[in-house]
Image (cartoon, rainbow, N blue to C red; front, side, top):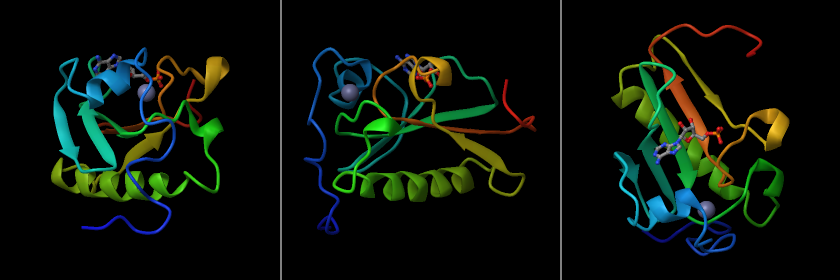
Length: 129
Ligand code: AMP
Ligand code: ZN
């Protein structure tokens, strides 16, 4: 399937060799892959904070949501569409779930490769701590 305009596998810096998630994308570090296409990868979080805790990320290296631009932002739509499908297949769509991305130090970001936490299987409080 051809990528839609504005959404190609070459978006962002293709790869940062020092980045953990770039290395997972490349298959250099093992992870439990849930869903994958040419643009997006979803893996199970290694330290789940909910019964279902999946990370959905662009395959190309984008450091965080703070680095999104008109040129690379289409990947976020693809990520949310994938997340909706994963939520259905993981059985959490009906009960509800949370999608969150942490940005920077105060946002709690620990891996500098854009990713969205898809979490479900329990109730969450608001606002988060
Ligand atoms: P954040 O702190 O928002 O940047 O999220 C990073 C997430 O990556 C955390 O929830 C970690 O548990 C998770 N994580 C770290 N290393 C791995 C790994 N090798 N495989 C899967 N998830 C990981
Ligand atoms: Zn990366």
